[in-house]
Image (cartoon, rainbow over all chains, first blue to last red; front, side, top):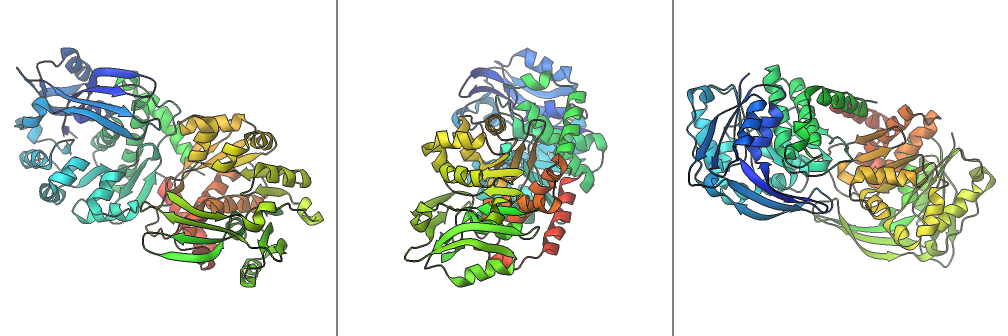
Length: 300
Length: 300
């Protein structure tokens, strides 16, 4: 099935306790599409400025990601994010956000994009996400991500979005904020009652929770000792998950569960280096080997 | 196999955002022995004061827990702990600790106790734990718990203990403190290198991690929406785990993994009410039903 992602494309500057990287390739749509590309062809829609290095586009194309929806705007600068991780490598502080060209991002989808079977709405305001959703008439599965910023500032638009998507992916703090419930299990079901058929709550190093009408389950994170930079873990989790669904071409409960497992494992590779550096050295067989280990780990 | 636990016995006062209970039955050895009693006969060794309600002893005896090692000291008061949970129900603040009679606890084990096959050293100083260990000559499996207080104040004694136990159970913050490593996977292996053949790191609502020379795995917590009071979750986790090992009578890797799962599930019941109130209404078939659900949850 064809998979479309619309979201942010960024140049990230990341500081951990032991290292730092400036202006490296990042953004929700980038991590998502790279992760999804292990499973199925992906179309990426996003916007960058004239400071965007062409090599980044080439890298995405090398994974057969369709970048024809990547708009380069002359005279503008690419979205930039700067953050610092606390020693636990799970919590972070955002030091600087320059929305730049992403602030006025208002994509008009191509005919091909409109007919994508699966749509993922990455980081962006609910207003933007709704606009994309309306264009994407062919999608049989529509999943969105959201963030604390939108929960606090665009609640009505977010509520409207939630009534129109099949799935929502968000992190634990966001789920608590959205539902005003501190119990993450209750919070997950409350989000589901706002509209989506299923909800995935990401807990970083503690894994992810899945909620649908008939199912509630946990997927623990893969316990890697090599956490170098968690940036993009959540987006590559979503990319691995949605990519696997596109590969399989069905959204049965069993497929969804396998998809969550693949998402979990792609994310476990992502965190092992900065930016996309670890994924650049990962091939599908590496992922399958880790999947074997993960299945063994969870069976008893 | 015979199972012995030596640890604290307490009267707890607990406050959550919605309720409070004063002077209810608690303590590491109490939660441990009650949880273990679903699987195997348990001998409990501990000390209380003359304020100890006899009904508590009767309750433990009703589960076939051997309380002949429970010492009641006239003129003394029982160990008391008072704490308050934060809204997330995972973090807590200790408001008051009165060690009382537990401060001078120096148990002399009976002949029966000395010959127990499995020994669990619950909450107590490493000095106390070492004294018990030396008496318990018959034990083929010796597992200890430890706490931040002892890591900070009795490091040498703790190191001596670690060289002599087969297993250690501690929480994530304690593992980080003990190893000075923020990555919990590396921390687990570092603790193991200090002596124990296996290490279990408890992560509260996020489950537990297991480390041995050849294995590293995660057991997620069972996602219950009814978290009323997490007090005793860690001790009943250990009780369920050790009780199952005693029932099975072997410590093979596969048995250990099943034991961790049983510990996880007993703890998931414990948190559903204050003190032992939920466990008092739980029978082995309830546990087995939840185990079926848990296995289904983890298989894909």
